[in-house]
Length: 198
Image 1 (cartoon, rainbow, N blue to C red):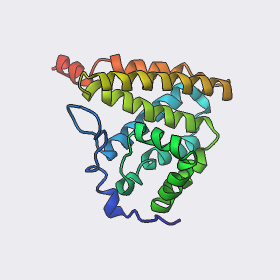
Image 2 (cartoon, rainbow, N blue to C red):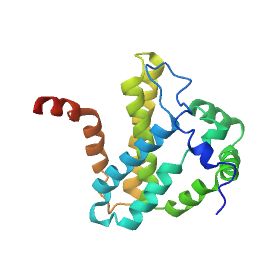
Image 3 (spheres, helix red, strand yellow):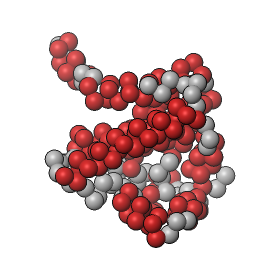
């Protein structure tokens, strides 16, 4: 298994590779913190959606993919979604080209992506990725028309992904995603609870 261009030296720099450079926000998010959040959110979603069918083997697959899914961005950079959509209009096969480049740069992520392809885990990982974007822009984004539009688009994308998930995998409780999202945005902070304990 080749690691492509990415070395452990590069992995150590995930904490310095910043995301969200095209939006107005009051905080930074590194590639490492994004990967951590996506991983934690994905496991929480999988436990709620899949229940007892979320085996240790599936958890390992999900963990490996989520922790590595964007590591190629250390070299390629995090391209904003509007830019990717514009590229798709001009070059319909651009996704294949970009995936090919990312696989050359960091083949491990491509291998882990193949491990979950076509399964509920792939949808769960994408939902966790979207949820992290929604969380960041809601918590750290400034109150601008652009950020409000981003939240609207992310909400629509979540609905679309959940509808597709329910159609493709009707035996799972996809409403569990909403429980995770509610907890993320409304649960009391452990810091507050701990403060009350003292």
